[in-house]
Image 1: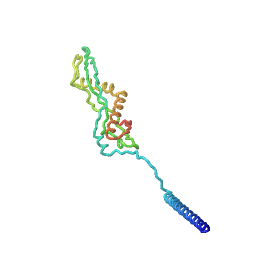
Image 2 (image 1 turned 90 degrees about the vertical axis):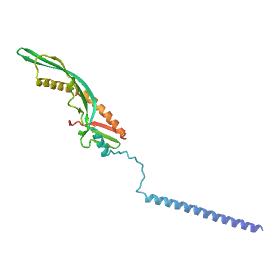
Image 3 (image 1 turned 90 degrees about the horizontal axis):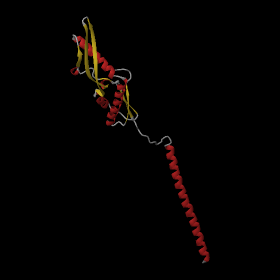
Image 4 (image 1 turned 120 degrees about the vertical axis):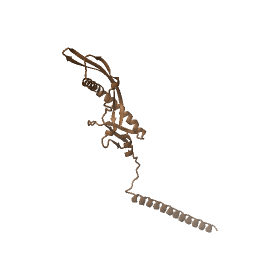
Length: 215
């Protein structure tokens, strides 16, 4: 009886050992299959790679550009001025003098009908606009209805009065169209143009001015 019991135990041990070996072989085979699958996928995709990137480029459409150009004249600085101008005529019977006060309003700005080709473009995430030079938008800036005759002696012709008007015109334009006022107008233009582009959905802008002297 004891001998049969020992034989049974030996049989169970051998069976357990065989089952363990089989289980380990199955596990090892599964691991090998997984490794082979991973290696195969890696080899098949050796030339492929995954990367994350952002496209920060923007576009401005021809319709948007045309809508801006259609603004035409855009005023950025208005200057009110008055000039006291005189002229003297020397005659045989004495001198004649004409003194008049002229009032005018000079409007400085840009004319968007004068933009150069490609004046507005994009540089990655930034809209770059090159505006025409600041110029005098209205050449008839003297208000003749407000002109006052400060002093008048002697006889003066229409040609004399026209010459005095032209003198006042030159003085007024020279006084107001100076470097300081042009710079103020440029700063106002850059600020307002930046606001316009931002209202159209463009977050980053760079405003420049055409320095080629084109008017």
